[in-house]
Image: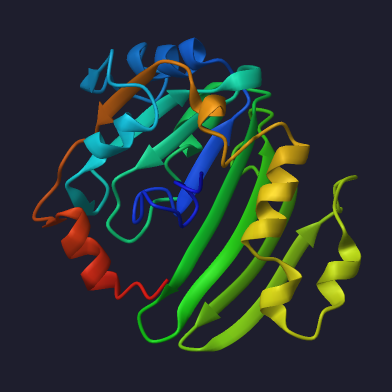
Length: 225
């Protein structure tokens, strides 16, 4: 079922980060202070998909994120940013676990005055600062104008002939994104894939923040799909 990446959990999960490391190591990185300070957090939350209800309210900036244990040593991160998610939420954790593969995926349905997009970013952190992404694919629409960007060497499972399509939104869309994720062992639309334990991390709050319910956030974003 399509819950994340523009699915029924919207606006939660437009951006989702996947780390190829067991849930316990991610939790340890949070709790042991390897992301600079200990964070308030909750364990033993409802399993997926019920846990997605706990990210509400939605805020700007982000104030909490879920850590979800997944099959195949993957761990997913989903946050409560009212704009659809925060792609950098996994950055400190990636830096704290050298050698981890990080996959960041986005599918934003059509919203506002002509905004939409699909992106995939893949990196392997080797402990050096400012680690670049090894592979990036981006089909983005802003105010009705589509743009295309790609960086890095194509991965073996990619279908680069798709990137020659005249219409940018056909070069890389949600179906292709889910296909590529599956090739890496991430079954994005399979509830059973997210069947592990769940924890939630509360982040420090600085100054005033925008707070919205799910319905208010969707109306604010003017989601059309």
